[in-house]
Image 1 (spheres, rainbow, N blue to C red):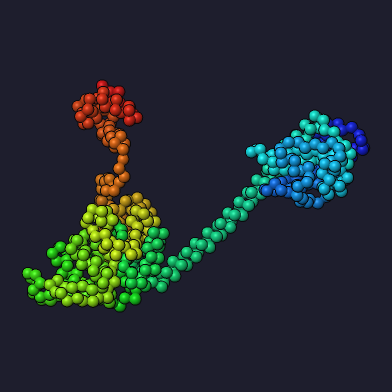
Image 2 (image 1 turned 30 degrees about the vertical axis):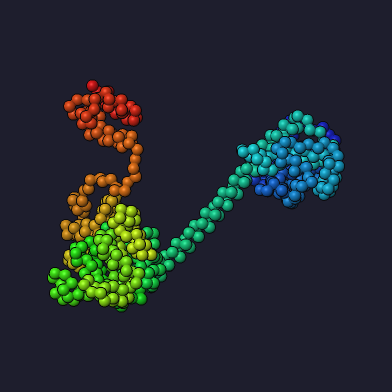
Length: 523
């Protein structure tokens, strides 16, 4: 790079020569080198005492110089507040020119005093959004006129300086972003390691061996079991059929202080209504026809332990009233007896039904619901934790191998994908049945999934699906009929015939609903 030649004091500035000089000196430079070259060539070419380029801080209260040229040499960068300086005026976004006597305008500015400044010229550096991010300035110890050509030079190199400053800020932001990314990645790894440790610690201190899975849904269930098991609180386990509600109940019992007591299961849906109260609360000899001897009920058998009331939503209302008393008072009377029996039994209940809807329909006691719903645990459906399917498949292969006398070593990825793409309305129980069928039909040590092992089900609308506008339902039905007729509207096999409509009426309705088909214009 050719060094600029210092001009004699008071010599006339040639704007074209200045432009060429600065362009030649800064064309290949970038970064700090560009800014240093810019202020040097600008000061020498304009024959001024000092020049600098500076960047405003985020609060616009101070500036940090990026390059400074004073008295024929570069000086170290520095930071200064803009209050009481001409630099503050640059924030207006306009060129600031003080041709003479600048110290009288800014009498408290120490920098101007040290430079023996008389004149000042600065141009703001603005980004694409129009915000002032910095400025380029020259200061001289003699009056400074700024004609149109000199100002044009300032504009040209201010644009170049702006581009470099914006590039510099972008690099800094990118570097900060990369550092943040590294920090976030490190923090994520730390959290994942901590979660893995806590999960392992949870499994090691509690017996959850029958509950298989690593998904967030399952770990939420395990955390809830871990928290509620040591207490005597009533637990209501909610979830679809086959999600493993009984396994949760057994895990709560095993990890409770009652684990040495009995775990008594009652399937409320499997017992006739006439016998349910006798099964739960016991009966005396002669209490009803066939009661040939006294019998203890399930609650008495579970005294000191846990009773699990499965399918609690199927319990008839009379039995619900007696159950409510047991929950409230921990006492009962056998059928046919007036003697009160005190018990110490923890109650766990499960259902695949919406008990609140049943309360609204008058089929379930509201007071009993709130007694049962002390600590609800929601079991996730298998379709909501598909990532657990590979683990469950391996678990069932191991579990079933001894009973079936087969050892399956390999599970093809394609089979895992097929299993994960199925909706599993029967949840984990259905998956176990499918794996057992597949193992029976498999020849060799690689699991096979012959056609028909996974049942084909027609699509069903959810029972609790949201009500939709009539036009939406009508549009869906017309589209389904048109799909069936391959777009044919008229004729004996057309959509109009199936819908019992005039073809023209159907076309008009289709147009109103925005339904188009390639064959809609057929006669």
